[in-house]
Length: 396
Image 1 (cartoon, one colour):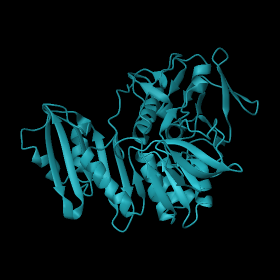
Image 2 (image 1 turned 45 degrees about the vertical axis):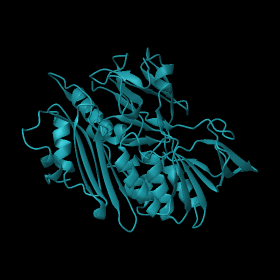
Image 3 (image 1 turned 135 degrees about the vertical axis):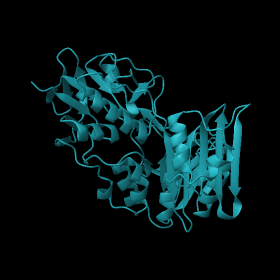
Image 4 (image 1 turned 90 degrees about the horizontal axis):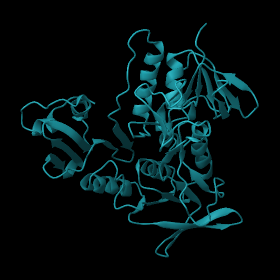
């Protein structure tokens, strides 16, 4: 008898596994699996929603089905519609939820009119329906998601203010120089940027947002507010089933939870103390698990992912950026930087001993292919001047 594999979650990880294996996939959203990386382009009007659809799965997807309980003894998943789905192997690919900041005027998951998260296709479509040229929009959060949302709203003609509590934009991925160049580009798109700026509350009238209050007492008028404060692994289903949960659902090198019949992949999974929250690791985990479930001999192992962040920002002169590993050097590290102010191009790598440990590139990504391979391989670098790392055209 064939093994019954049930996947909960139709995002990047779950859809990839369903492309590789015959599974029953339970997708909570009403849409067929789609590529979240393209949501900013859908919001900006660059792509139609159907362009985001992921390649077809091997089996039909049950859309709009929310899993509410796992019975580990009976090996069944109970859905909100009362149906039960039996499994031999269960894969949790439940993804993550947007972080809702503790603001005055924001209570629970019910958002006031005009306040939107930026995580799902429905979020994106709701924003696109609301935003009109000249609308005043405030984006809370200056990470990758917030920067993407701000440039998309600016492309729609909104008057956009981007607020970041930290010292600089995309501070998790970029060093100070790269972040300053990014800020210049974002401002060139017409976005007003405020860093070291803490939002304390929302003002409303008749249930509709009218302004954003800052901790220093300043008030920003707003018809639209976008919450881009990061994401949190969606672990409630696993926790309520008694699985080991830290930040994410804890998995081993076989992507297996504390129950040997249940696996977890993607944003909800925590491997070796790390939750990635990126598409690249989600795809790699799905591929490793597919190989593992198909293996008859020695099973493959997941040893972690070295994730590269890439982003293209539009405008009259589009800006490409890529970042990986540790972009900020420690004492004793070797650093090589190349800056071309006229082309707004910046390249930097950090080398520790004989290993490439991180880097960031803006404006000119010609060397990113070679750098990514050197970093992902984690092998000793050749005895050659470090400058060659930044000047070698390894392709993208």
